[in-house]
Every structure is written in structure tokens, then in C-alpha cells.
Length: 362
Image 1 (tube, rainbow, N blue to C red):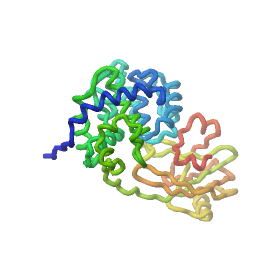
Image 2: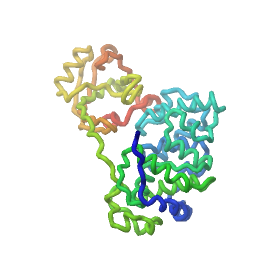
Image 3: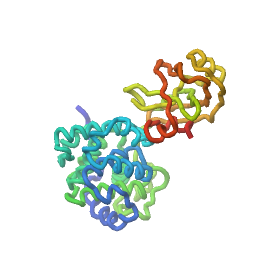
Image 4: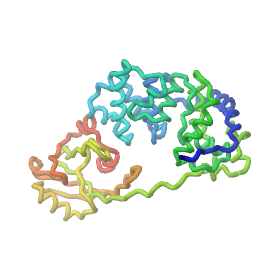
């Protein structure tokens, strides 16, 4: 049986909504975001998925471009995968986009193309967890659901002076359960969640000193009272990322560039990439590899090294630009997959290239 997490001083939580809502309503213009202008269920869902692991300022142009191309659930469900991936290019965590489409298809088949206003129905959609279901439920439907993310966890742990490890799912659920009885309904439900988000993004900061002098919760905050704000929240160290060395090949013939499609499963599944080889190779080793695969090298130049960090792996990349004599035959990918030659226009409009390879394209 799992141990129950008991939060200290839970009585303080009932005092949080009023000052937070007053503060949020007084400064809402300072955080004007396009998805807040018209918080329909579709807009709220799309923005919440995009905002996972991504800053709001970075999301805005992607959100606007995505909505211009796919303005509703029906168009998302009918979108072809290449177009979807191109719209998502640069946001990373591409499984989010694939789950959006899967969920849209379920919504068309089961809910007549509408987002359901029920927490359990939302939770059963692909790509939607407790946080996202609560955010959609509260913002779009006015349900009294705390959307517990890193911001809420940080604020609550500091206010309560709690030293439980927020990396534990049981702690996150305990905060959700403790806040739920104090959540309002209607517009205030969504506003309260967004107030927590804004407070965490602008005042109760995760790194460096929080701006306690401007915080509406400072009079209630035990961490502030004890001067230990920067010691909280407690979070166990992440597992160290695995490092992989790669040699990336920018193969050119005229203005066309060689692309290779990644496998349908795994990291960056189904996206287009620059062909690459394991390890850090020399120019001579790259030329020998290409010669062995019937690709005749005319010129080869070293490109600046690059690094790209994923959640669980770090790529240390060495790059070479290679001008080929006769690209009509031969392959370069280790899995023997034929190359595709893309024009500049196709690179811009058709093929979705992950950020990890954009370093070499730029």
C-alpha cells in the first residue's frame, strides 16, 4: 500500500484563491496571450499541448500559424501527417502533434467533433493527462479543477513550507486533492489556474530569487516568512542524459539537399533528417563511406560542431558539407534507405526537419 502524502498547514490553501484572482484580474493585460483572447475548448487544448516544455513567447507564432492552417478539430483530424509535422517543426516533442491528430480523430468519431466537458472523457483522449484535462476543463468549461504543473507545485510548496519531493507523482496528486475543495466554478476556475501559471512565470520563479515584494501571496507564504524561498521546492536530481556522438552529412547536388526519413517509431519518429553516421568521423572517413556507397565526392568541407539536447539523450554532432558529382545513384544512410533530394522550396514548405539538424541547414 502506498504511503499517503500529508501536506503541512493545508488550512492555508483555502486563503489562496481570493488574493490570487484579485492580482490576476489586475494585471491580466501584462500577460496578453492569443489563446486567452478566445478560450474555446479547441484553442485551449491546442495551446496547452504546445505549452508543454515550451515557453509561451516561443509558442505564440506556432499557435497562430497552426490555427490559420487547421482552424478546427475537423481540419486537424483530416490533416495529412507531412503537413502536420511541418506545422509543428521547431516545437520539438513531436509525439505531441501526433497525439493531437489521434485525439481529433477520436473526437470526430465519438463526440461529433467537439471537445467533451467532462474530466474523465478528456483524460481518455490520446496525449491528455491530468494536468491538461484540468486546464481544458477549468478554462474552457469552468470546472473546479486544479491544473497542477510545475508552477502550482512551486507556489504551493513555498507557501506551505513543504519539503516533500515534487518529482514524486504522489506529491503532485496530494497537491491536486488538497486544492480541489477550494476551487471556484465558472470563469474564476480557469482564471485561478492561469493566475498560478502567471505567478510562477513572473514572480515565484524557479531559478534565482523570487520577487516576493510583488507577490500577492507573500503574507501567507511560510517559505518567505522563514527566508527559505530558494530552498524550495525540493526535487530529486534527474537521471544523467546519455551522450551520443554523430557525424551529420549535408549532401548537396546543385541547390538540392539529401534527406532521409527516420523510422516510424522512436526518437523523432517519421520525421525527415540529414543523413548521419555514428561516432565522430574525419573527412577521409566520410569520403571513404560515401565512396563505398556509390556516392562520388567532388568537395567536402567541415561545418561547425553542434550540440542538441533531448530529454534523455544529448547529441554531440560533427558536420560535413559534401558536394557530390553524381547523386542519381547510391545511398548514404546506414539502414540502406534511399535518399530523397529536396529543393530549397520543398525544405521550406514540405519536409519537416527537426531542430537538431537545423544547425547545419542554417
